[in-house]
Amino acid sequence: MDLIPYQPFRDLEKIFDKWAENFHDMQLGDFPSISEPRMDVYETKDNIVAEVEMPGIDPKSVSVSVEDNLLKVEGKKQEKVEEKKKGYLRKEIRSGYLRRMVLLPAEAKVGKAKAEFKNGLLKVEIPKAKVTKANKKNIKVKYKD
Image (cartoon, rainbow, N blue to C red; front, side, top):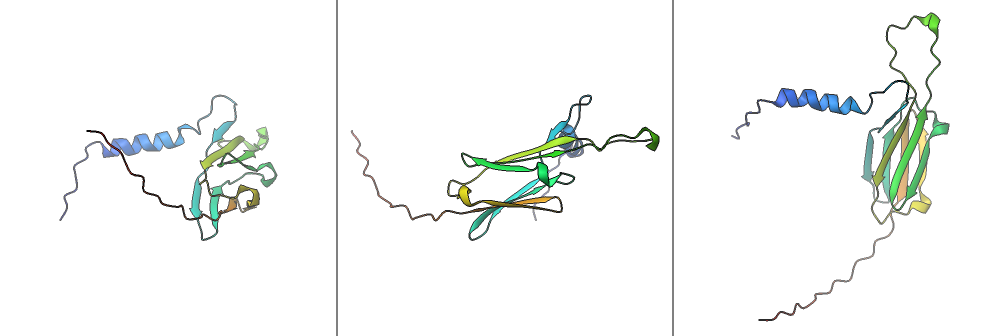
C-alpha cells in the first residue's frame, strides 16, 4: 500500500490556483478583457482537430488562421447596452475578446483546413500530411586517443 504524502499547504494552493485561473478575466475600468478559451486538440486517423469553447461569441466575429504551423483562433463578444431601468444588482457579462493559439505538428496540411461553429463550439479540422518513413543511417563516430 502506498502512503499518501502529507501536504500541509494543499488547501492554500487550491485557493491560489482558483484565483490565478480567473486573474486574466479581471478588468481594469471599462477596458475589454482578452481571455483564452478552453481548447481540446487531438488527432484522428486523418486529421488534427481543435475544439474551442466560445460561448456567447457571434460566429461572424470568429477568425481562424494558421501561420508557421501556429493555429490562431479569435472572437469578439459584444456587451449588451446596460439599461438603467433594469436595476442591476450585479453585472458580470461584458464585452471582450477571446484569443487562443496552439502550435501544430509540422505534418499538418493547413491549406485544406476547415472550421465549423455550432452552439458556442468552434471545431477546426486540419488534414495530416502523409509522413514518409525516414531513411535510417548509422553514422560511424571517429574518435582519437
